[in-house]
Image (tube, rainbow, N blue to C red; front, side, top):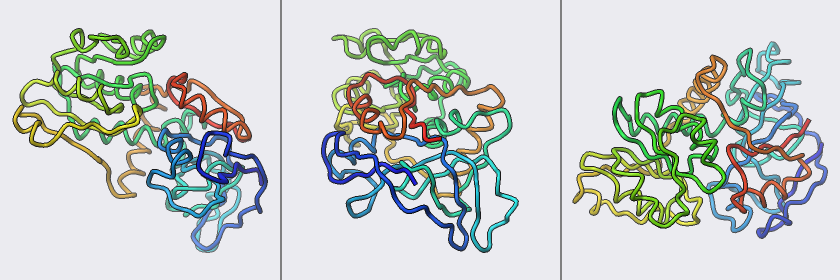
Length: 314
């Protein structure tokens, strides 16, 4: 099968197209012919430094999420799954490949009316956005600031917060504000411009996907009783806001929001169902062939992407 190897940690050029033996589904597993592979920002950090939740000895095939069609199953798995369109996590590695063998319980069927590309775009980001929304629970009339509002998770948070009745401020970089407005943000702001925070606040909820100085400025906009959910570090550093600072301001800090695997699968299914019903629109800003995974990583690191970046495999 076709794969992309991570041979050592470093710049995007360490991602090398190649071949690997075709996987065979073992007991309890399903074989998926991959159409699209997901890329997340944390995968670019792992590739560069080894930082992140993924494990595996080098060389390895990176990638933690794919979508495609089940072509075979192992012992103990319902053969009726063959032919089903699915998305699935891969357990932290092996996703940049034309085939994957995964635990059949990890499969999430793709509903009719939803394309595989859109489903893969929602695999990780959809469940993350729903988790974050539930944690912060913005209500009607509240003011919500979404950082990195043109990113994969941010584009979904803008839509979900707006649907919850909130007034949404979408913070993004230059050239991305029209997209943020189109997704429903009441006030798009360019957070690369000095003094941006003066036009963004005050707010009741901050979804912090950037960290660093942007997170610090966003925290200062929160009113008493506000909530700040930190889930990303696209700036390269986590938010340095402390629990003591938050308590002094009457603000709740939430970090590391997650859930058990069965809950995450249920949230992915919910995101797919909402998209199939026309209630949630994933934004796929760019697609790269599998063999151009290095170019995809470079584009993400250059901040030139919007929405989700996918690898086209089939």
